[in-house]
Length: 200
Image (cartoon, rainbow, N blue to C red):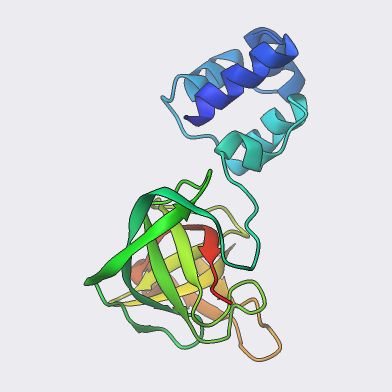
């Protein structure tokens, strides 16, 4: 189910017309129509406004679910496990597919990466399989898989003038990585983290 389909379903459930939703969310009717029809991808601020107007969460609209830190119930549907991703000093991104990871129910992802290191603790632990939804951009504050030259790392995104700052979750032990000017042009966002699988 797409974001647009979820919005339409919630509109029907709550008896709200498209005009009413656009007014309540303070967005244009044409913009809302474009999102519902799948012609455009909404910004995070727009999603928050729509979710508020529909009395739900952004995760509800995206079809994401909160995942516990124990062994998750798996269902049919799997994504490729692509090498490892650094959670400390970036490591060489291994493009060979190691296997496949079953997706927890309700999660939409395109591939999984193995977390290595401790810079993203306690959010992601060493050895976690981080589920990534592939996209070329990420809003500030999102945790993203980032390619730096030929090396990949998992960090929280923060934009700065003429560049990008990659923030560790474990700020007590790891410093932010700052890229500006020409150096910033080597950064490529692979996708955003939408969950993880952790074995206990």
